Image (cartoon, rainbow, N blue to C red; front, top):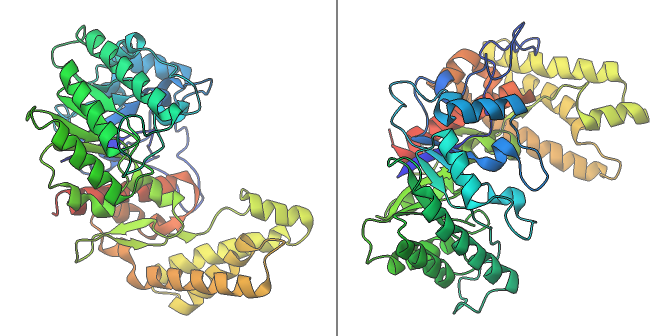
Length: 427
C-alpha cells in the first residue's frame, strides 16, 4: 500500500535560528525553504497529492497559493513546483483531487469536470480524482439506496454524474494519466453501488471518500462491501481519501484491492494534537507518542497578551518565565539542569498559559499536575536523541519544543519519517 502525502505548502527554513527565533537573513519563503523530501535523506512517502482547493481556492475562499505561485504551478507542473523531480522521486505518482471538504457547505461543487481536467493537465498530474461532493452521513446498518437523507442521496447522484463526465473529459489527457473515480456514500451499500457504477463507467482506480469521520470498524465494513461489489473487475485498485487512522493501518493492508491512501495526519499531529505530537518507533506494532513541550512566544500568544492587557500579569515577568523555560529544557538536554528543576521552570510558564478567568484553583492544580506528568515522560525518554532522522540530528531538543511554525513543522516532518519507516515499511 502506497502512502501519498497530501501537501499544503509544507516546508521549513533549513537555516532557521532556533536560539533567536529568526529565519535566515534574506530568506524567501518557498524558494529557500525545504519540503520534507528535501530536508530528509529520502522522501518519507511514496507520492504526493495536491488539492485544487489548496492551490486555487473554492467557494469564495482563497487557496494557500499566492497568485504568482498558482501561475508557476500551472506553467511548470506539480512535480517541478514541489521539487519532487529528483532521480529517486521522478517516477513516483502525483495525485490530484478537488478538496471536497473546502466546499462542503455549497449546494454543488464549484468546479466542473472540464476545468478540473484542464487543471490536471496543466499540473501534469499522474493521477486525478473526479469532482465529488462529500457526504458526512454514515450508517453502517442502512439498507437500500433510499435509506439516506435527501442531501446525501442528492450528493451521491451529483458525484456519480460528475464522475461520468470527468471520465469522458479525462480521455483527452496523456495516455499515462490515470483517472480516479470518487465514490461517496452514506452506507456500505451506497458506497458499494457507487463503486460498481464507477467500474462500469471504465474506472480502474477508485477513491473512497468521506472516511475522515468514520471509525475503524465502519471503514472495514465499507471496504468489505466495496470489494464485494467490484470483485468481477479484479484489476481495480482502491485509494483511501484522507485516511487518518495511522495506528490501525496494518489492519487495512490485508485488502488486496487497496493500493494507496493519502493523509496529513503525521504532520498535523505535531501541532494540532494535545499530547501526541512526537512519534517514536516503539517495540510493538503501535507507534509511541510524546507530548511536545509548549513554550510559545510570550509577545505573540493571544492568551498571554490578554493577561497583560487585563493586568493579571506583567509582560516583563512573562518574558522572564519564557526565557527560564527555554534555558531549562536546553540545560536539561546538555546535562546542566536536573529533571525536576527543568519541570519546575516549564510548569511555572505553563501556569499563565492555562489560566482563565473561570478556572478554579483546584482545576488549575490538576491540569498542571497532568501536564507535568506528560512533560516528565517526554524529558525522561529524550526521544530526539535516539532518532536518526535529519531533523532530530540537526535540531536536537528544539524538535520537541512546541513554538512557532519552523519548529512545529519540523516535528511534523520527523513524524512523517517515523511513520514511513515504522508503519509502512516496518524498517
